[in-house]
Image 1: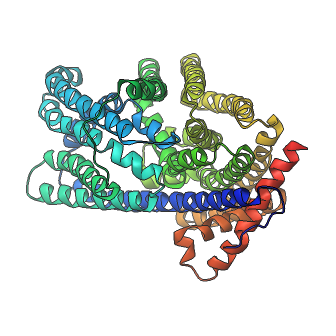
Image 2 (image 1 turned 45 degrees about the horizontal axis):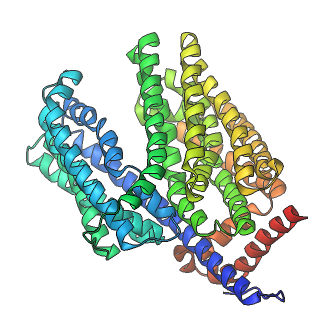
Image 3 (image 1 turned 30 degrees about the horizontal axis):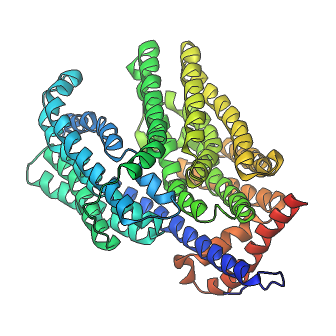
Amino acid sequence: MKIRQTDRVGGTDELETTIAADAVSGRAASGVLWLTAQKWATRLLGFVTIAILTRMLSPEDFGTVAAASTVLPFFFLLADLGFAAYIVQVNKTDRRMLSTAFWFSLGAGVVLCATLFLLAPLLGAVFRDEDVVPVLHALSLWVLLTAAGSVPMALLRRDMRFAVLAGQGAAAAAVAQVVAIVMAVSGFGVWALVGQSLVAPAITTVLAWITSRWRPTRAFSRTEFRTMATFGGQVLGVEFVAMLRAWGEAAVISAMLGLGALGYMNIAQRLVQVVQDLTGSAIVPVTQVAFAKIRDDRPRLLGAYLRALRLTYFALSLPLTLLAVTAPLLIPIVFGDGWGPSEQVAQVLALAGILSVGAWLDHGLFYGMGRPGVWFVYALIIDGLTLGTTFALAGFGLVAIAWGFLVVCIVATATRWFLTSRMLKTRVGVVARPFGFLVAAVLASGAAGWGVSRLTAEMPVWGSLVLIGIAVLVVHLLITRVLAPQVLPEALTMLARSRLGARLPGMRRWADGGVLSSSATADGVAGGEQR
């Protein structure tokens, strides 16, 4: 690693800060890559498992578990109360704080597990399916298992041990899927899916306790509890608002357009969410920790945020632009015939998804800065606006709802520019500038892909998809290289700094050079702001 020299007074402190910041950057890069690799591995294995299970289990079995699973996230949120998010971002932790968080989560998990068990008959009546009741009885253990592992998992995230988390998550998912297949072959029916749902969190929790090497004491501090509850309550509010908005949207669409329309919307949303999940799901957990560790050095935080914003826009806009162009070709392949109404909706939602990826990064920033309350107010307003827009446009059909959501995403993006610039103590234009190359790259590459799709309309579908993908990729890279020339070198530097990249030939030398250039970039941004 090359170390930047300094002639300033207090140069030793600055040198130590630079080394520490570079270490955080490298571990953050590794975290993004490891967690993304885990998502890909889990998704691919999941597709294989689903392909096998759908041949052994009935649609009713899947529906029963899906119905029972809808209530589980609410119970887990209440058990955790946002304490894990607090532990990840707080400056210092001690045994009393961690033990307080653990005993509360464990106690709440026991109470909520029992509550869910007792409420199972009522929920079964709501779903109009008696088979949901025994499934809920079993799945109530899921709340207890995840609550028990909340603090060890938070400590692993705080220490940026993302490779460990990714490995544990992938291993747990693989074992759980094997268990599901074995149980299905043995004739256990719906309980194969229940077993899969319980084995994964059980393994993850056990492994987290082993690798974190932390053990609670009997201490419980009311002062620490109040502090964590104040922070966690705001985190909890954000999650509840998002859930209520999703439920409200589903209720509006099903009531005004019918359950069939809700199904078409759900398929379009799932397609977009899978693309986002496989390319950007690691952003929030990694950036929250990384930003928390450098939040006291505002110039370096600003430089890190801008680099992360450019890379996030670049990495996620490419697959989502491709999806926006190819949705009419992909949906029949992935979901079969009969899903035509989902195609245009998916195209518009993919464009909206490009805008929303910036929210993932800002989410990590506000939580890492210890300001979840600001994000809660923002989420409350934007989610309320989204629900209101859905209600106002539902009479015009699903496509109109999708366009309305795109407009809301534009408003939300501009709003975050002001909030983020104030948080980082910089000008709005500095935060908004990366959006310019994003719009140009999406419009140009999307137009190129659309043109190729017209020219290859008579070709076999797979051949057309390949040519469209090449066109979108080439134009997107060219526009990015011209309008944001620093993005590609920053992406390579990020890869080189990671543990995965360090194993590739030639990456270590790039990392040595990249540390200097990235530090200079951060200082240059900060210096420009100060001037």
